[in-house]
Image (cartoon, rainbow, N blue to C red):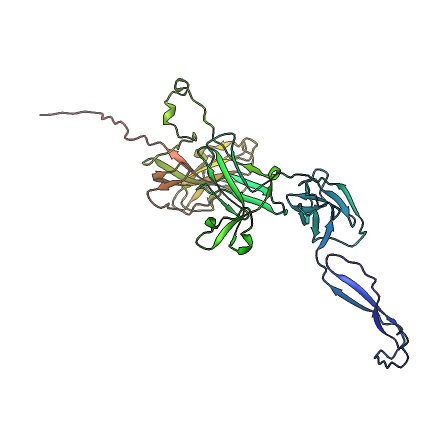
Length: 407
């Protein structure tokens, strides 16, 4: 009696593994044996397909007996119709010959020379290695100390990167206090002298299994019962980026002032506490065509301080203020009844109007922020709004005519 037995005709890809089942005949029972089977009554073949998610695919890049650690950045291979390269412990598919671009497809363990792919398609399972370099006697480190080419360093701008022997990437940015705290790394930066100290590893719970390790010291166990477990890092993968300040001695005769009075970074505030500033925003309205004498035009906003009219030529020509009148109360302009000939101007005419608020400065900071003595009067939009310094002329001189004196 026929039953269902699996005959696997399948392809394997990232999403599914498909297996096809077909009907086969049962073998004859042994003499004296009793067998019982249940099967479909019809004789037609039945096909059943089952699908299940496929896991990650692992490739061994070197022979098991060799186990040479790989040189990071040296791997290039083709598998299942796609090309792969390694970069800082990760595998990228479809990158160009310069290693630019590509899609993240997995990871690589440089110590065991195994590649793990979590993005792949069905196809030819033959593996072709185009380039691969192993190393004898790796230069691996668990800590590093070095000095930058210059000093002092800009706080918060020191970035460290590297790759562990297991292929895990390391990335850390030093804080403004100089501490380096991230996964697989800790350390400190002396911003004044340009010295960087780092240790690679992680804090783990103390365990008797660590007693025989060379790095283990019971005195290093902290109050929380944790100890720093070092982890080796490829020395040639360690990189850093930083910003170094440099100072050029200035001749006071050329500057016209004593350079000692300048700030360390050379930036000088253009305003100081007690100065007047003007916050202003400018907007342009396009006026209707064929302007006529006495025509009144309402502008698009209120609280306007000043207006100017220009034409639409490549180099805008200003319209004299004698050809129009501006009413601040209702924020409108009225074309002059007599002087209204716009034939010499390129249409349309544009009205540039400005909203302003004069305000007293109470505090200035070197980062460019300014604090005012009161709140601003208008809701200025961020786009097109500026703060300008204001020169206060003070009291004007006065004269008196027609002097007369009588006892």
